[in-house]
Image 1 (cartoon, one colour):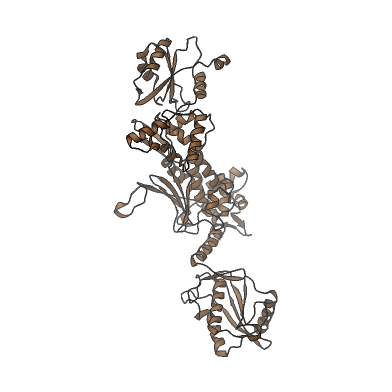
Image 2: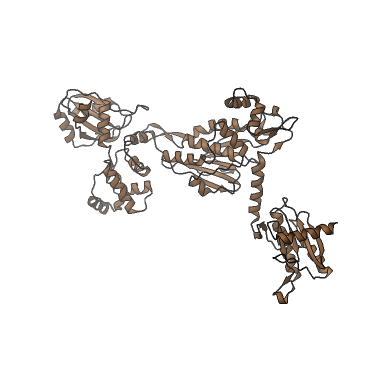
Amino acid sequence: MELLKLKERLEIATQVGESHFREFKSAFQGPPSAKSQRDIKDVCQDISKTLVAFANADGGELFVGVEDDGTITGIQYDDELINVLLKAPTTYVLKTTPLPTTKALIINYEGKKVLYFSIPKGLEYVYVTSDGKCLKRKDLESIPISPDSIHIEREEIISREYDRAFIDNAKITDLDNDLLQEVAHGFSKTISVEKYLQHLDLAEFNGDDLKLRRAALLLFAKNPLKWHPRLQVRILKVKGTKLEAGKNYNVLNDETVSGNILTIIESAWDKLRPFLTETKMSSDAMFKTQIIYPDLACKEALINAIAHRDYSIEGRGIEVYVYDDRLEIKSPGMLLSTIKIDDLEKCIGIHQSRNSYIAKVLKEVGYMRELGEGFRRIYELMESHELSKPTLFNENKSFTISFSQKLVYTEDEKIWLDNFKSLDLSREERAIIRLGAKGELLSPKQIWDTVGIVDTDVYRSYIEKLKKKGVLVSEISKTRAVLLAKKTHKDKKSIPRFRIIIPKNESEKMNIQAEPLDSSDYAKIFVENVHYDCQEEDIFNEFSKFGEIDSVIIPRDRTSKKGKGFAYVEFSNNDSVQLALEYQPPIFIKNRKIRIKKYKRNIKSEAKS
């Protein structure tokens, strides 16, 4: 009966041909009119390579004695050599990676002998031939592949199935009922937790009781560590830009947050959030808070790590490293093979998730948006905060997103930039304007370095655009800059030449909003580069030497109540204005060199008022 079945199998195989699961090998070589037997060693190597490829893929069967077109030519070796061929799956495969149980039989078909080998999919090893070749079956070919690639593919399959598996000994009493009810009632006030779990596909009723998927335990477990030993986020504050070990260990703060997924999201965020801003003393002895990383971008990245980490890697949890120059969120498991870093960086929406059941619930309860939107949101938030794009790493069985501190703005700089928000400025133009916040002259080199310019035409384009918008003026000519460069032995690009000024239309608009009109003769001056913490009294004391002052007005930011960087001083008469304008020595208030101009009355705006 077995011989009959094998004959039928051979006949069917020759009719349907080779496939992903089937291979033919001839025992002959040479032209059709002069066929000769192949060397026994070559045939043995073919057998081992084919079976190794099948075992590393999805299993398959091999017929030796059949041509590629399905013609049965058989084998003509003596019994001793046939026995060598039948042992090839053992003798021609690396001893440390023995193949899974393999059938090796002889089929007698119409007076011809055909060898039949059958092998299942192997999972215990990555299989290699005795001469060190690692192959995998793909369609009709056995292709070379690295052992690491097979390991990664197998791990990916395990990781994709991890959250969907049913856990035999898990009961609904193992879940946090209060948390589950809170989430369920957000969906429907009347739905029971049992029905809600089934609605989310986290549980199925088998006729006797409710069977829970592992995702239900990861999301809602009362005792999460019972079901996963590393269901946690560890946050480390590192002094410096590199993690040291031993006596140089430089971790200042190390906290680990554990819990089920829905609990850990908020707990880990509460621990991480204080590291996203920084308070420092500035050069003018003021404590100022800097926005280091945007809240929403970092929370999106944290949730992304929790949702998409490889939970089948049970020996590691998510790690967040806060260095002096960057913040890194590192999660176990590399990206799925179908997701490329280049696509994430280009903000191409990737609608795939390793943990499909976990991702579905997080979307259902509002922690996540549509799949594939997370990274797009992160990149948009970083750009809107004038920060460089995150860097992504996919290596060493981990995926890491790294946030840089490049282009961090102080609160004063943000107030300064608010003066220009009515203009349609590009990110690069804002970076240039930021340089002028302290009223200092800017050099071409500062502009090149800040924006990252590599082309002269691009540099000229920025300069011309800012001049046309009325916010950049040349206070030192190019000729004068060349002379100064020669005199000081510096590169001409290093000579400060440009000044950033508040656009006139913004100044006039602020004037109309800031003060009521009166019947004076407008004996006023416009004062620029005023320190944001400057008070009216400071300006009054400095300008009283020019004459009697009627009023000092400093327009202020509505939120922070800080000054906008400029002021108006109204004297009793125009003679005082003239004295102030003609005053030669520089005027400093709060260590800032200020500039003054004659205030010009806006008749058109006044008439409207």
